[in-house]
Image (cartoon, rainbow, N blue to C red; front, side):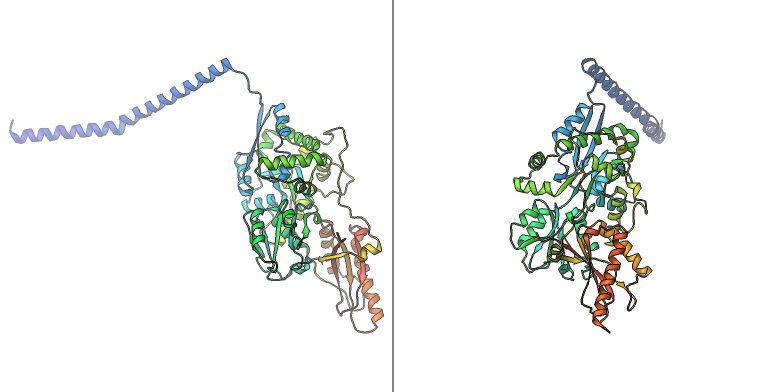
Length: 515
């Protein structure tokens, strides 16, 4: 064979070899690799099944029939959920409890519920509304009330700098607070209830935590226009400075800062009995800690477990500033128990939503005007006859005692209510349709505000001054009668006429007894 033919034959065989290799890799090798992977997967599955079989041969059925994952944070109001008794009682009922502390990341808390990574979670009502508004979804509903802060959150200021809430009303005022916390909610409630229209467009100085607020207070000067919004025990720590005082606290705004237990809609649908048992167990353990001494010991122990050392005085103030909601109060808030003056949960949600809308914290109502979408009363309905213990539980109300004339005279004026001016026609005390509409809105605001109300009538300076004084008082009394007829407690309101200044309006001053 010639060299040329040999070379040609070699090239042909080389091409055949290359084509064969390519064909193998493209068509046959993957099949072999897949087959090998499938064999390995089958072997692993057989090994797992064998292990499971061996474990069953030598083991027992799990003591737990279900598991529940609850998301929360380190707030002392959740101490019952973290108590040994709560976990033990659930364990005895075959429910395994897992608590997840997400550091008060409410957005992640709601997302975890939606993804099914957690089953229940604790929110403040405002945080739930705000987070749902931001996410555009309603993946969970309220199944129980945990607690309400009635003084544990407060605005603390230098007494000389801010003696009253009205003194906050200036463009230089700043609220130092932790965003997306009950502190922010308290500040927004104050802004919505009092006439603070001179505040700047962004009056908040954002801190990382209550401790960060405290450090900023220590670094500031007394003349700085700063109001510190914090919660216990930092409130007590600030008050150790005699120049500081509580300007306003959460006890003045019923139903404003309320913690609730929220369950994933999907989890309720699939595990309703477990949700019912969790709520029932919580109410029973909460009953075990209804005595103040036991509650104080629990809070001290709980704080220590989360790395915070509380003195007994600090723990006592904290316990006094939080109302843990018992079974009967839950039934009342859900509208199942009648004849109490406790606010219905639906109205609580609506009120908080309105505050968030008015203060531009949310762009729109996530429930689209249907606050009932955010709670599920079926669980509490099943507990209508539940008695957590032998002692009858007390339902705490928000009634305000009647005052004597001397007490009305000594009332400390806190601030002016935020409401449009009521203007009367010259020389009359007759309410216009516009005035009635304004007063209807004021009724709702006053029912969620624990202050005494002084209605001040005014009149023109023209003409007979004695007649003008009488007209000023009659205007105030006309407004007082309207408010009382529409639900405001008569014992907390008083009408007076002031020296005519030329205005024909009526104003509303909120006050409290001196400490």
